[in-house]
Length: 137
Image (cartoon, rainbow, N blue to C red; front, side, top):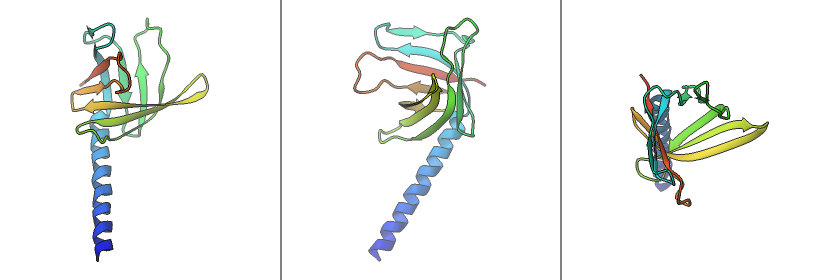
């Protein structure tokens, strides 16, 4: 009987985690424009609306960065995965893409709601800013 109870609880946990991840994917879908870099050496930098630095997420787990025409930036696009983090209220966002024909995987802790996506600095590093994006209509 105890084994059935444990199996049932594990099943409920897996189902609820999958639902949480699906809900996060729904919120993440669309375009997000850079709004702020806070912390690190440069302090706080605010970016105006219409600056053209955008991350786009689709429901089929694809992402791409979109840059203004005059930006000297490395193109990044590929697959993403989002899942609940052990930290309360945080998510883990993994971006997978190719850089110079080599596979790259980046995992960042993020805070996510309907209007704001914040990439948080790694706890092991001391001088990296948090990067905030705003959801575009």
